[in-house]
View 1: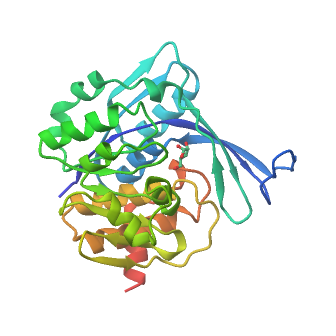
View 2 (view 1 turned 90 degrees about the vertical axis):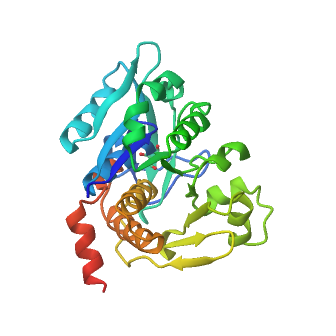
Length: 304
Ligand code: RIB
């Protein structure tokens, strides 16, 4: 069965500098390499889910500049449906200057531009497509009024949702309540919980307001922790050589969505997502480093 997924989210042109170590404030360091690539958490998730075999529709907004071409190139090459992408004549396509150090860790600034002008009418236009989907994924790199609107629309239509609360700052509790699954990383979880909780499980549980809500907290090299109101479990990941962690969270979210939409049990979908994210970090770039299904299946087979 082909999973049908709708991704509402951002596209950014990633402007990536690779260096041995990050500069400190006020310091200049030499970079080793520079690359421009397709990024944005939403588009990265759409590309990754398509490479994993899903039928994906992306809803977002681009500017009318040359950076928008990077989006169309990758969507067309990979087969991401972009019927519901609108263009803005006044504001530039989102951009993300990114620094990646020798250990593959990154620092990212997003200048969201056209992503912030996504409108309710863009969601309304795709209502029938959302109704046909198995799952809708959304993040927080867009006009933030749209996040609860899209989640409510999916709920009305009986479609399950994943909210990847990234970036996490200023996320309203009422918005978190609307999602079926929340997927913060540890830093986002700390931001969402105000750093108040005693431990990770307590912090994640504090976000859950319904018995049927789940948090899946990504832990990098440790894998991911599933947190439900009454149970919790860690799903370990796969040891790989890390080149660039950019886009690993996006690949994880995409794979989790694909796994669940295909009917996998949650721990199996998280293991599938860990495998996809592990492969993603072995390559440079964001959308470009998302793995194809055959490679993820091969890694899972080799580990059993
Ligand atoms: O998650 C990685 C992404 O974050 C990058 O592609 C960048 O564009 C920012 O959105």
